[in-house]
Image 1 (cartoon, rainbow, N blue to C red):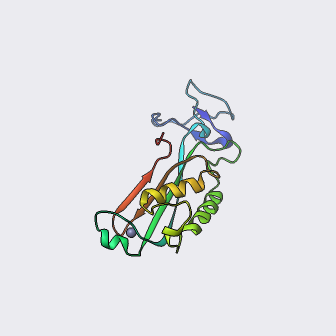
Image 2: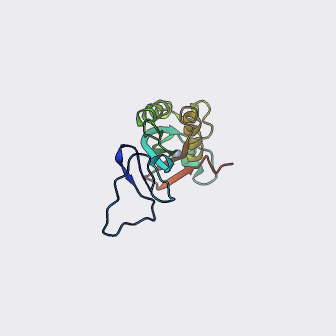
Image 3: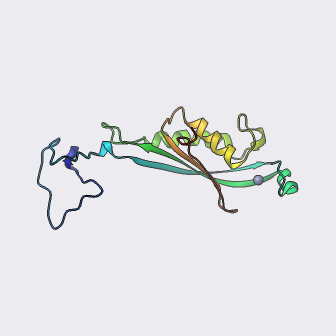
Length: 164
Ligand SMILES: [Zn+2]
């Protein structure tokens, strides 16, 4: 174990202290073989947003109602995974994440999705891919994009890491 910067005591997950306290160590000083610092830990941050939009959809099931122009309230969530920057102690500045999400949200909110360039079919899968591709340049460590329609119980997760 190591006493991290700023004196924060960090224990590995399977380490337990029974009725004892850690000795005081100077920054960077180690006890034993295990070296766990905040920078070596993996975190996942996320932000949620929603948008309301109209679309049509060509499909076999519910074909008639899907082909008519109709709308949904979509809820989305963008996940970013990684280790904190050693200087800022942040995986990602949440202000940057919010700014980029607001930019993408503006491309979708109160739009006719059939007319949104580069979206293609406005399925949940297509919306996940659209959000990911529009965010990945500024946020290269996106680990997941979720789009759901809570009113109907529909949910789609895009895991860009495992897409190969
Ligand atoms: Zn629909």
